[in-house]
Length: 469
Ligand code: GLU
Image (cartoon, rainbow, N blue to C red):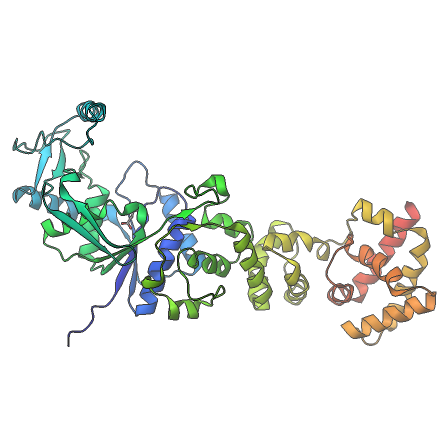
């Protein structure tokens, strides 16, 4: 019995921008596959495009992966540091007659392309330099001598077999004039040298795969398995772009999403496990398989993401919720130095918040000593006739012995009864006095969190406001 080769997968972003949600989903699928199989997940930064790659982008990608909790077992490996290996293998192919130097200029190639199109032919490199036995010059590129007959079959774990006619494939450039390898060449060398067993990536690469398979064969490498994941589209079925809303992973963090919500959302874009919608990380690792990845494109649905976010905000452990909230509170200048108070605030607000931004904004009153009244609400509820009701609450509050949810309800009922009015006649103005708004967490919760002293102080502010209005 042969032992099954250990799964080794990789995520190989080009550092030319932020981590896009599509890239994050590719990373997630690779990560889950590795974890499910007990394999290795490798992070490789494909930075051989000297003009477009930036360090800031690399940082942004690493930050986003860390935020999502996608840890890697090896890397980050920087492709640009491996160019000597790539160049040596380009040279090997040239020596073996499997690659050749080409001096065709961009203009010449463009002219030929246009002519082909005008004559109704599919544009393709015409092999001008194939047999010229050129040597390296200043502007020479290296092309792979692509077999011009036969078929190449991509045996895709998600899409099934896809057959390509080699005749359709170009003698692709494998080394640019600046001496750097092109994507198709470097990716093959690195995947092979790093022992990658499964290449899982977006299906925008599916047309590259036959070329890559031919390169694997030319270089004498074993061909890995491939799985091409369908694209993510917007509601209008166009490829997901900024037009459809935020596409950067970290933009979701800034908008107050929890990483678990985004992970849970992304995994369902293309993968399913029965009808289940909510998964813990452990469940995802347990259930994930490439065979349950669908063949068709997934539609990005911001409403569903928001729904999941709400779910996770509701279910999060209080301390973690507070930790995640802290930057949002701090950014608004709120005092975050009283852990107990923060826990109470978070618990009061969690069931009524869709995002952490929501939670920070709607709960601002917890942190502001001067209550900011919503003008319409104040006009309606902070009126002369209720002033004495509020004062009665303030006067009697110090002697309220049972300051629990239940106890507060009993206390407020008693005050109302004593004043000869219904509970809501006291409770609604009290809510406005404490929060400045007509909608807030339960009045009892707010009172417990604020504590008696703050409640009394806020009632005095409201009474002053009434006197002055
Ligand atoms: N650097 C390529 C990209 O970001 C990697 C594609 C692949 O996974 O092969 O699109």
